[in-house]
Image (cartoon, rainbow, N blue to C red; front, side, top):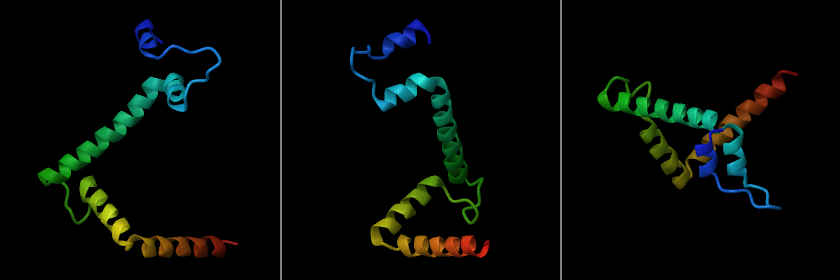
Amino acid sequence: MSERAAASLPAKQPGRRPGALLRWWQRAGTQNVLRIGGIVLFLAAWEGSSRVGWLDPLFASSPSLILEKLISMIGDGSLWPHVAASAISRRWASASRF
């Protein structure tokens, strides 16, 4: 880690263990930023592509519309029957393997 990066981190206090987020950052900070950045870049490209019309909404809706629909389905309770049906189907598929 460079001196500049080390200087930006809070100093360790004797007898006090750093928090989970700080330990996560110290362990693999650059790699984690690249991972998160890759996900953000993918979602931004997907959103932009769907807004300019490059993606057919029938096959790939925009992430913002998917999130909006998810929130509304959680709010009105219509999501849970679908989750239950998927869980039951998964249970039957797992049970039929044996």
